[in-house]
Amino acid sequence: MKYTQGQYIIADKTAIAREIYSFTISCPEVAAAACPGQFVHIRARGYTLRRPISICGIDKEKGTLRIVFEIRGEGTAEIARLNKGDLIDMLAPLGHGFTVDPSYNKVVLIGGGIGTPPMLPLAKAYGNKAIAISGFRNASAVILQDDFRQTGAEAILCTDDGSAGIHGFVTQPLKELAEKGGIDAVYACGPMPMLKGVSAICKENGIFCQISLEERMACGIGACLGCACRTVRNDEEYFAHVCKDGPVFNAEEVLW
Image (cartoon, rainbow, N blue to C red; front, side):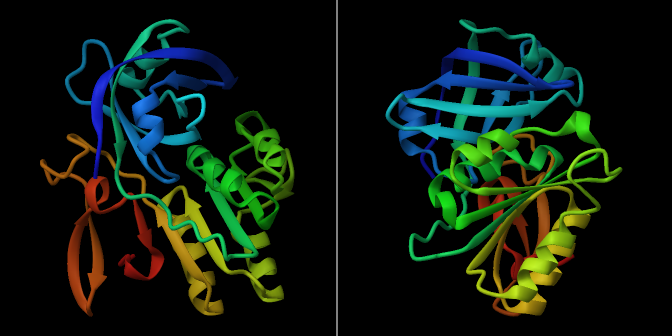
């Protein structure tokens, strides 16, 4: 796993929803090494521990990364105070990403809430071969739907309260698509109950599935062992670490 640590210029900042921000960061060496599903570890001014944030966009030609994050505490609030032209302290790219297979003809990308951003690089990779299903609490929390469409992917929106798109969870349209058949792979990131439901549908229908786990992290490189999760390998239980062994795992490996 090749990563670098440095101070990088924020090339653009946009507020895309309530307390959700999009940063474009100029970091040519990081962008050159990054792949879908990896994350960055950002140090907020005045805080020791870094904050992990999924990569939402990779532009190798321009040498930029895009991150989209939600304010969830004092650390991310401090990061959100940074503006265009400021320097951001970043350790990246980290973790193992998704398996992208050009031979796949139909893939489904599933994002729940702030787990939606890491699906966008996959949509860019697969284009019109992808169907992106996104789930949010309500209409005010919806993000990135136009971005998905711009990649050529079909975008399906779900909200818990029915204020936008389908009234229900992302598992509903996934189940309908799975029953029709023809899906080569499913990729997902979001809350654990959502991932568990997605994995169950894929197992029932014999569909290859990869999931990106969201865990609190301290070091981000596997040294502190704080982000352990139960997995199974070679029929034996194994405590993997989300930052180093993941954040992407084959769904069948995770013990729910």
